Length: 76
Image (cartoon, rainbow, N blue to C red; front, side, top):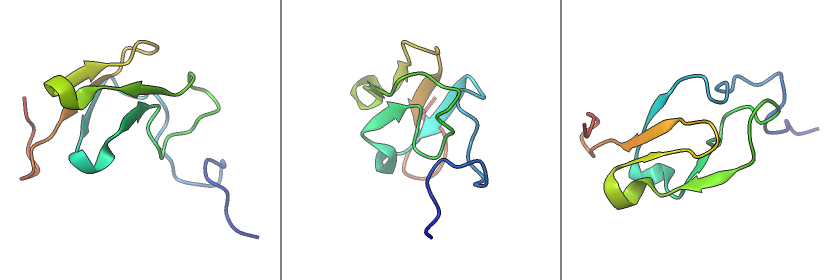
């Protein structure tokens, strides 16, 4: 049997565990909760338009997302 995404035996990021997340172009299109986060204790999936201004906030949980530069540092 193949492992299922989002099961409790996986090492995923807790959803909404922090208030600010740095994301890269490879994460676009960005949704909250992000892939790799547990979904059972989160809100419905919503797309976040972070590429437009470099920062955006989730309307459900208030998590702030910001674009990281290509060199690996932060854009802010």
